[in-house]
Image (cartoon, rainbow over all chains, first blue to last red; front, top):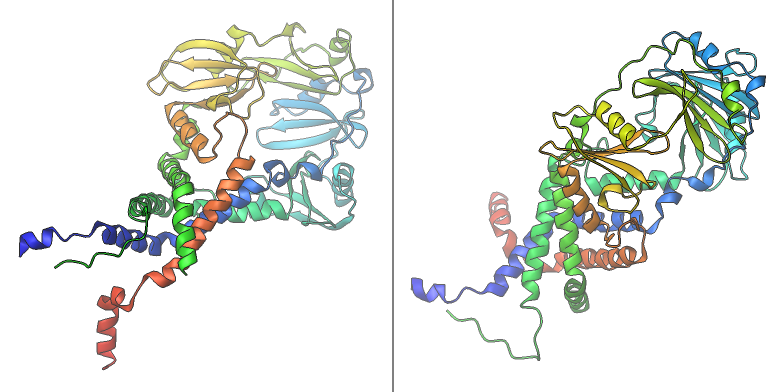
Length: 244
Length: 238
């Protein structure tokens, strides 16, 4: 009996069985992977980054004779390590860096400008926003929203009217653009969560769930390839009746 | 349902290999620790420098430039302060103490890399890279490549314009790069992941997954779940 059974192992049935049971477990995730991957490849990353949301603010040449000397301003902040001369809204400014802290001062008078008030933040956002829309909402956030995680608070959030809810984040300390977001970016971040299966923080690409699921996907593909070996015939034949 | 099964099998035949490559490369990237991939353990914080005592005035530096200043930075670079001056023509560095021009040549790139490196290795080679490869995907070229002789073959890339350490790689990064290249089907290096080939194949594979998902509803019989359903039925007294 034992030997008779051995000769009746039906490999096609085994291939089908393993493939369908693996697929039962991983099928929904496989679909998520494909659809999220499709979105991330089909929408160009430059569009996702919102490159078209802003236009470079005109940078005006600065006559160093008309501004305070950078070193002189830097010396006023003993713990600071960097100073940058730039222009904002057509005026020369210094941005002083001290670790993660920043300060903005008028480069002509040396008077502090930071922290920016609402009007100053809106003016800067409006100056670089490339769309036709007007500002619909401005708020000073003291808690960093997940769409700009890793940035420092407080931060001005300036939302404009227009397609995909374009939003610019302006630092009250430097007056500079910190991040630009719109719904295409938010959608990317959402599908990325499905892609890396970190359904909480959307950052951990080494989580155990992903590792297990990814290897199950490998097994599903391999058993699928195995099943392919039995799935094509040269011509239709009557199936042999199973023996035993 | 027969049509779905036929389509699933033909899509599997044509696109199955890429589906397999995506799952293997994805699984391998999930296995490689992101911190190791970023070569984080080789990072050394820059030394804290005292502010420059008597730096040259920006106005006197401006006289040696052929173009007006757009932006200027006074910042540490390695163990000295420099002015980084941006004009419509280019970006230049000057020693903040002497006003002398600073160029990021091989020797300075090597010193800057050593300053930002925390490992036990010594510099094995310094080269200027001007061709795209897996190590310098999406990086503005040329760039200085400073390789160390530690077991992980840690390598730092130094921006020849600003002297900043642009990024760092090690053997784990290189392994990851290989799987990333396969994952985004970026065989001619540098095309990124938004090319027509990958979108086409991803559309086909999305259908492969969807048709497979639909087939699940027809592939199981009550008998497949008998071990689960029989006891439940018994409890219900059927």
